[in-house]
Image (tube, rainbow over all chains, first blue to last red; front, side):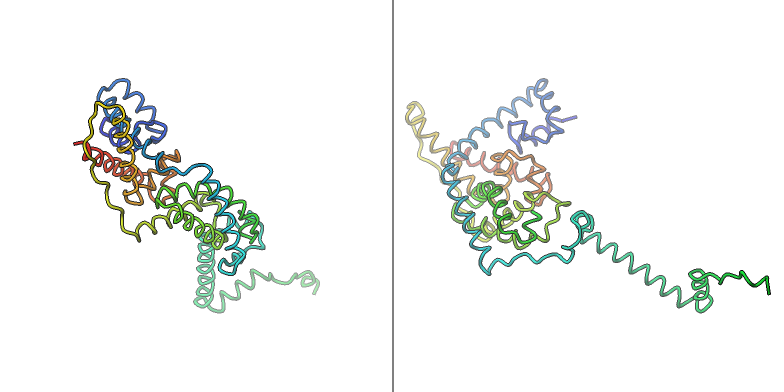
Length: 156
Length: 171
């Protein structure tokens, strides 16, 4: 529901061109314009200022030829700057050798998060092994290296 | 962009060709001086080249990232210089004459153009992106690095200033 108050705020920001308005408000604004004389008045006031701004904007505009010339100047100036020592070649990323999909997934933030989780896990293992002492170590070793097969024990 | 990040100058040259016009146009609107705008965009492009390895495509489009660099440099420039004086009033003219009507309109447009140049940089930037480049408030917000609400406020303040300057002239 678009109130007349909100309608006025939007008109005073975006003017009388609904294409500039936030998309979610456009349909409601059109409905309000059909039913509210106040909304229409606000809109027509905004339209007058829009027209003045448009006219004034054209005075500030640079001609297309001048725009093209400016772009050419920019391209050559940037090319010269890149060729000189002032503009250093980008440092290749530490992860530059990795596949692109991995680099996109492994953003620095995620990398830091994963490093933090790994550090906590390692710290947990170290602290755990210190506090549980030899039996724990033995149990870990037992888990990693089960008892040797006793195939011939019964024969003895 | 990936090629540019890997140090391919020719690939970066393509990006300059593709995005240079927009960057120059918006910079001109914000700083109101073509030669300064060109210097700023040139510097922004070099900075984008130097920082291209830090660009993350998963977080933003390249154009948004580049335009934000341009916009920040324009705003920094405008903050450093003193704002231009507001335009002065005009001599009263006879409204019955059509030639004088035309002159009056021209005067009004010139005055409004000067008033637009005198707006704070952030308001000029919002107006250039939304009114002249046809961007949505959200798109303008991502380039300016502010919220859509902030863009809305900049636009509203800019319009209020322009309306007041017109009203003061004709009152």
